[in-house]
Amino acid sequence: MASTLVTQVRNLQRRKARKRTPLAVAEGARLVEEALAAGIPVAGVIVARSATGHQRTADLLAQATARAIPVEEVEDRLFAELADTDTPQGILAIVEPRSWKLEDVQVQARQPALVLDGVQDPGNVGALLRTAFALGVPGTLLLPGTADPRNPKVLRGAMGATFRLPTVLTTDDEFAAWARKQQVTVWAAASEGKALARTAVPERLALVVGNEGAGVRPFIRELSRQRVAIPLARGAESLNVAVAAGILLYEVSRAE
Image (cartoon, rainbow, N blue to C red):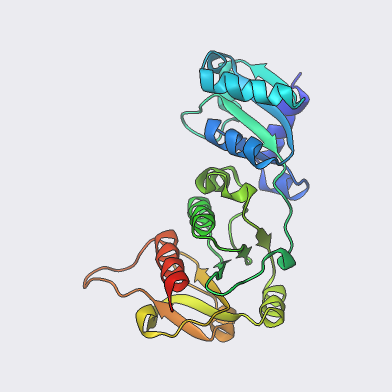
């Protein structure tokens, strides 16, 4: 019979199940380290038998034991079934990322919020969260159609940023109301937009990046005060959405 921790992990592999619980699976030594360092609740740790001899794993297990976090050792074959990666590192944790609210995202001068509009690829969403956190963004808003922030691939791509950066799932109407209340100017990244270098940057800004193929939706286009772009070399079609967001956020933060 499967243990409680194993059953929880199997359930959390399904998006529908994740909608019914605040829990998520953090897989890999680095992500478990980040979860423990961030101080978020950890419901349990599962470790593969072959990984228990690694010093890094042993240190993590010692930390978990010191915090009275349940630890379960399983056979390598079972761990491989629970893991989301092709080459698992032999340790994962069931974690409870903080639940953030829109009011937790407070835009400051030259510190724009990042908004994801229908960014579907979990790897891209994870990279965007990691980039936003690294560049001092006060929070990230996820509009409809964006990948689940508790998806295992998103968590790995974010490299722990999910545990520290205010990240809010929100609707179009809620986002519009938040922007009005905070007196935030909305910009949308678009290939046909105006070059950022030729655009005066408002002090309070929310930058929206859209779907990898279709870009931002008509609702966002109507809400945006300006569409901005990064000039590319002749023959270059586009940039990865996370790369583009990183460039735009950096340039906005240093604008005078």
